[in-house]
Image (tube, rainbow, N blue to C red; front, side, top):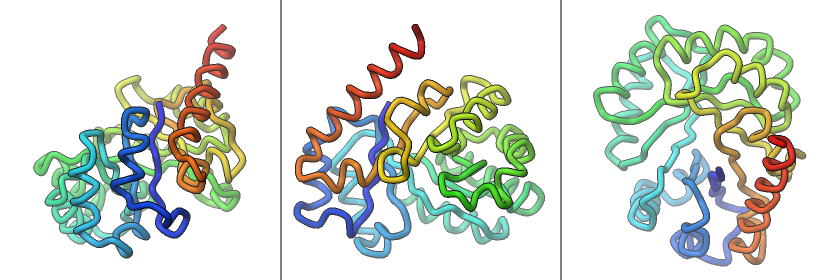
Length: 222
């Protein structure tokens, strides 16, 4: 399953709505982050919402006290996004417990970062994967983020969570992981950005990613 990450600054030749028009029937959803919001504003998020019926993940990587994160989440909900990404390292008490209560009330899914795709993740975050997964389970998060660049972490996380908790894996393409690697390790979705949005033909790029995913999936599942 493929989630397309839309990062402004990578592809400026066509509008976001045109990009979505080209790939929407092949994508499972979209991820947008702080650069998108700062460049296109709330209007841009609303336009993306109008352009697709697929889930939209707002990657804010929230990391603050509970009340602040809750207010941000309510603003996100007003834009009709389906899920928001937050960091697990802020902890449960007076932080993620409040965020989770708010998320349930406003109908927005929570996805917690338990590991990241860059090398620096090993310095701190990866040392606490088990605790972060425990928090994700405690707040009944919709899903977690685990990197395609380190399939061993995905396998470990999958062993700790129920099938109902989705694993989202970034790091495909520019960061070094190949399509399908994360799926074979136990991820539910691979998040792919620049490999698609930086292509002169995004639709063909999405097709190529999906074909590679399928080939690797069939091979690893035997």
